[in-house]
Length: 183
Image 1 (tube, helix red, strand yellow):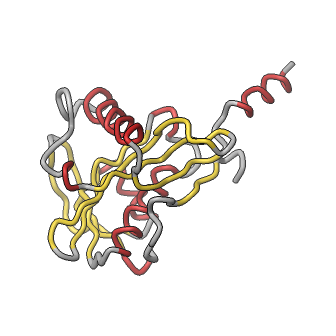
Image 2 (spheres, one colour):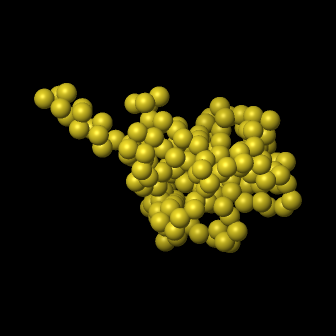
């Protein structure tokens, strides 16, 4: 009986996550819904919606859960934008609560964000990181530049070590993160 339950769970568990630039309207819609769920409802940082003046010129990235190789839903997102020539920022990194322990969704979103900006001429990649996420960013070769207080919460201004992020010339295809099940 237990083996049957495990077999059924394997059939309906994502086998991989495709991390890529948003290319389809449903991906953008689900990415914004996920951001609202994380930043407005779960964390209570914003009321109603977290969109701002950066969204119209930012590139949204998504992590798609895939079953049998087919994208099913957006389970993670981040946005990137060029603030000034060569200086890029990442922001609004969000992973669905039910998927935070699956694969390396957040880390892979960060890697694609920096690598794709690097391919577009980025010389400095920065992010305002919530304090609880600093250890993750340090493991991914980021350094703290300053401690800050933003949106009522402690943050750190962090900088990616670009030499650790080779340029990604195909961000629309992106990267694949396997589930722990398949890793």
